Image (cartoon, rainbow, N blue to C red):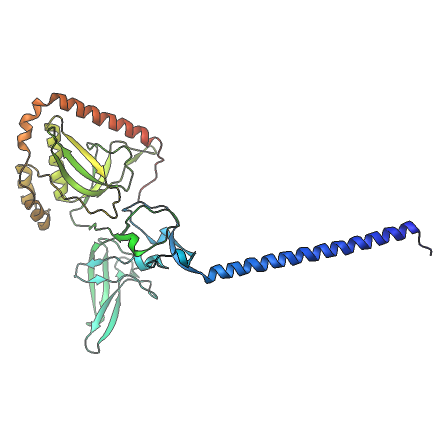
Length: 372
């Protein structure tokens, strides 16, 4: 059958088009292949020059207690990794001192172990034997502990079951403010220095003048300022929590963990603050709580409170010794002067009221987050 010239021309054009399309497709595939190969080489190069480290998955504040769930593993360029970085948060976060009522130190988990344990040296064959720590409540291996927990273990040297109570757990905190994706290093953390004692209680106060931008988790000193300018530190480096009412932080109220001695001393300062017109009981915030040591307490309560402290059996002997070593000069003589400071008293009250109003306005911009 004869081919129409137009059909022949159309067929040739179609074939040429197909050839061109195949050539273009081949070029695109080749370019994609080269690009993918280049990306793979770049990824391989990055992996060869990188190392797995532990980084924060959230922002933390200076002095905030750190836990394992705040961290995740991530590949980071070796040139950007500090020499004291770690691959596992447990290597550092769990490196805290845990002491029981038998005076033994509980070892935190290490590589290959996911439980707490004691190490006993058997002098008979000079070997170390581990005793796993169990929680008495559920007979389960202790993978987490806190102050006051009752535990038990089998002493490998005597083959006897023993019980104990956690009496000291020194948690790990951030030395400085850190943003998410910050690499965890030994130099960026430290023990909290906070110990749980039998007389520790959470106390709530609404008579302390607070910094405008005080936030939950901040550390403060409570200070007592007299009309003549004298200034005393009543309690030092206390972590604050702020109660939430109707989904909003209270502007004038804070909560702190205090010992029996600290409760009595602060109560005395509150009473004297009421007695002395123009005096001020206020809080000052630590700028880098993780790095700053607690300030030395300089306030001494009056003789009646001192007598109460010395006779109260709830107060630890160490607290009594600490109190007796402080400056014995009290401020009772200032009470008699309170009526002569009317102008100063008015100005102090105005300052406190103004600060509280500013704090209320500030807290309106801060969403309330339930505190642990």
